[in-house]
Image (cartoon, rainbow, N blue to C red; front, side, top):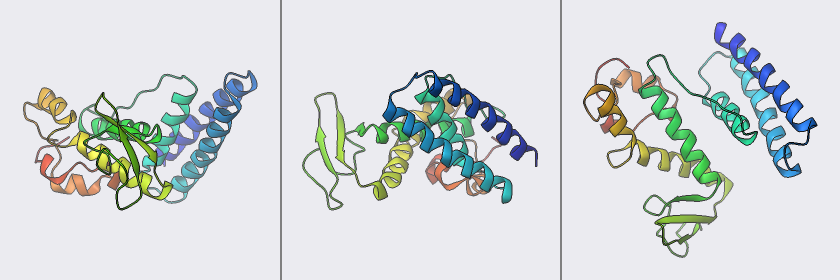
Length: 197
């Protein structure tokens, strides 16, 4: 499968860049460990996709995280550079915000003070952001999706991009296209309507 071959070739190039960067001491020991762990996960994701062909958001996410941690430039673009690009880029931004434990206080998993029922401790800062001080790893993915969907939703920034691209604040996905997307990339249902993407 062509996609698997492209992913393997890209992984080899990234691994070479990682090896060179780490051998030159361009990172701290903690960052090097983080990069090596993500590369291990990336090797597993590429192998799994080659064995069972299906779209893997993890391949895109892990490779972009490694590139970012090495100070590398990277891009994401679907065929038309519109909706699919937008939903993935939003997921990437949400992941980075949650990993850094800072999300807009209106999106935080609890009110901007003390703890919620899931024991997520947050504090509100004067700039309108909540710092997630103690987020359980099991809950992290759910918070990432919540942040991404807020950004993809009616009050987020992405529908403005859609309006600039196609003249209406809706993703150009029909119901079947939304269901064909990997779950982490699906925009909120009320934000997609008809048309080809």
